[in-house]
Length: 145
Length: 262
Ligand code: HEM
Ligand code: SF4
Ligand code: FES
Image 1 (tube, rainbow over the protein chains, first blue to last red):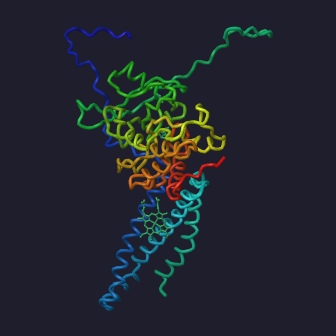
Image 2 (image 1 turned 180 degrees about the horizontal axis):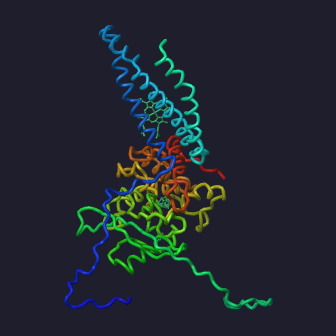
Image 3 (image 1 turned 90 degrees about the horizontal axis):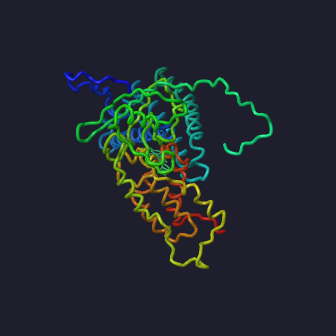
């Protein structure tokens, strides 16, 4: 190194401050299809669970008060609920298709090697399912009977 | 090389050798000194590197030329000892096996400690919980009888092949610390322990498969696996980790491993 000796009167503070960065936590782990399919599977599974919980409760209203049941179930006919149904079908469809993929991974010796292909096949089938369902359903919701 | 006496005339005139290109690469390293810092922070360093260098070389250059306090583990520097698993650009890798040319150096390279184990300093974590899980699956041959001729336990090629993949583990913890289940549940045995259990469960010479299957049938055992394949993608030895875990799951369900009879 060719660094000159610092003049004696200068304080030893010539050591540069570390170039700190203000980034919060660690980086997000960059997993691939397997990790993201699991994230989606957990989100959709939990969402379906809460929908079913509410749905079982509202359906059970019929035993308590048929009028209340009619009122609650009537709200399913609103456009907002119509869009919610799209989300529900999308979530169940993805969860079910990816669920079959997970079953293949665990049950068949070829499963783990084919997991990435199976993920994209599941996504493909899911899109086909949505193309079949969404336009028809939205026509039903917004086009009137 | 010595003894390279070739018969043909070799053109030994030195060619105008293309200068090997060096690049300035920025590394952003997550630092933590328990005696000084309340929390880890990111620090960046510029290093002159060649495409053929590895991330480990970059860390060496920083430690030797810029900041001697940078702390990391390495021993063999050749992918054998399993000391230097770390998170490089968000993925678990061995620093000594990650070539600079395989990374996008137009952007900084992020280096941080592996996740899910207690952080000690800079890139070093406490590996003890990891090794404790490893010890728990009894990673040694258990056999009641003596070898037939007093020498060796014979095994067919097919039987040896059955567990070949899981013999390659170097216990680097790249797999276990890439697992989202392990991050949130440190009690989970983790992929590495299951890989090393697989190595003995599927060994025809071993007699304690049922003991290990019992251990891994625990609620913190194989059933925690959510098949995210992060482990398989992280393993520097190319072990099909998720597949090995699936085979152990199947063996738990059947009550015994499927090992070739001959
Ligand atoms: C439609 C057919 C369905 C199939 C084929 C299916 C399949 C699966 C499979 C194989 C798993 C295991 C995932 C793993 O090992 O990582 C799973 C997890 C799960 N399922 Fe389903 N499922 C279905 C419907 C449902 C429904 C209706 C619900 C909601 C009540 C649901 C909620 C969940 C939840 C919460 C998980 C846990 C996710 C996790 O641990 O990451 N599933 N599903
Ligand atoms: S299975 Fe692979 S990633 Fe896991 S500890 Fe062994 S060598 Fe490392
Ligand atoms: S230093 Fe030994 S595996 Fe990298």
